[in-house]
Length: 266
Image 1: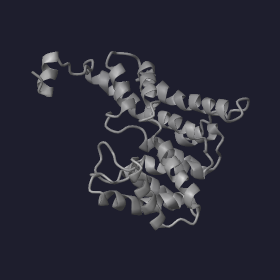
Image 2 (image 1 turned 90 degrees about the vertical axis):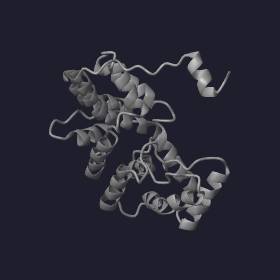
Image 3 (image 1 turned 120 degrees about the horizontal axis):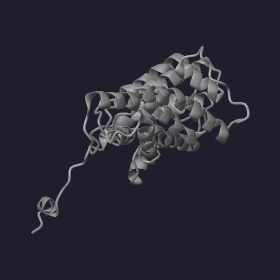
């Protein structure tokens, strides 16, 4: 438990140093402030003093912490921890999983989708433009990022939290307004195809636009934010795994005979 607590305490400072080494002034990194809560302190160490952005960081960390332990980063952390590796090694494995483009780049892909839409249609887009863009995307053989989920079969409640935040804190932002309009149009357009069982938005559909609003425009850093958040899901899970004495995790094994039978081969 002590290692897990230390991990959660230190990871935001490490992430802030990474940010300033890559994008900011690494000779003047704001010091941790014990008077601030975790989300506000992290945002402040990044150099953001807008208290609305602090509130966004609080939300972001909560809704990206974990879900069911079944996605790549959460599962990788659990898997390595099941061999009794310490939380630092286990979390490192999870972060390597998060680095994969099919996992950690999801919100960048969603943001790029709407930014490219704005390049084409400008700030005076209409809902008909959105429908046309969806149709063009599908006809080109691509998917609409941010819509559909491996587990959920309804609108991701984390996306709803993002919309609620935007309603309360953000006014007159064309990009955020586009995210809201997409939610009205895209599920209907995807459902019309008859091929998509889950046309609803997931958490990645809106997070990038919120970060952009407050000036965090370094898209490559979004995965690092995800990593900070993920610590708060996987570290407690590691503690529970040890407390419950869960065994080492092993995948199922198949013999050649099993595989032949599945393939219907002689």
